[in-house]
Structure formats: structure tokens, C-alpha cells
Image 1 (tube, helix red, strand yellow):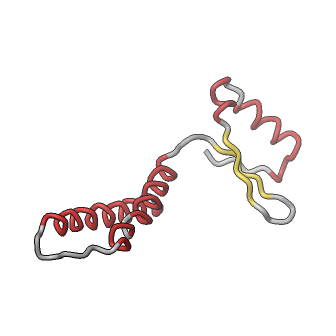
Image 2: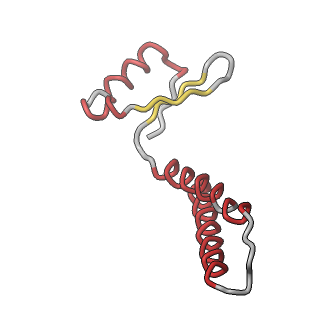
Image 3: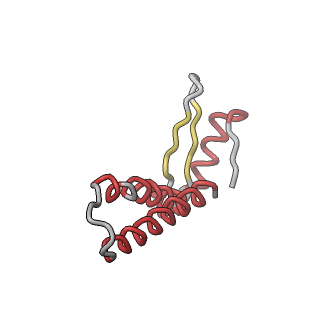
Length: 104
């Protein structure tokens, strides 16, 4: 949820900045617009777009924590399509017993 809020804030800033820049292009008061002013909204726009995309993805994932305490995530989209999520859960419970924690 926090990633979505951050992404929306970045996108809002980029849109606000672009609208202000368009207003500057339309006025006759300013004769020079530096390239930095044009490129400023590009970073927040790209980062905000990625944050929104990342936060809106949904689906079942398998989180695996290794012995070295490294976390890996795997999508279970194919298992959901074929209806094999429950057999996978049962297999993991059977083989790994107390080391498996299932949060649905």
C-alpha cells in the first residue's frame, strides 16, 4: 500500500511539473528554458509508474528464505491456472513439516 502511495505521489509531482512547464512554454516572458527543467519530471514519472505497476500486481507468490537468510520470491501463476496450488502446499507441508508457514 505504501508503494502505491509513493508511486501516486511521484506521478502527481511529474504531472504537476509538466503542466507548469507547458504554461512556461506558452508565456512570452521567458526566453530560455534549460534542458534540466525538461528532464526533471522524467525520473519521478518513470519511478512513479513502476511503483504503481509493481503495487497493483497481484497473485499468489511463494516466498523462500534460504539458509543464508536470503529471501526469494516465485510466482505461482502457472500452479493456479492448472489447479495445483493445494497439492504443492500439501507436498511442502509433508516434506518440510515445521519449516513451512502458509499465509493466505
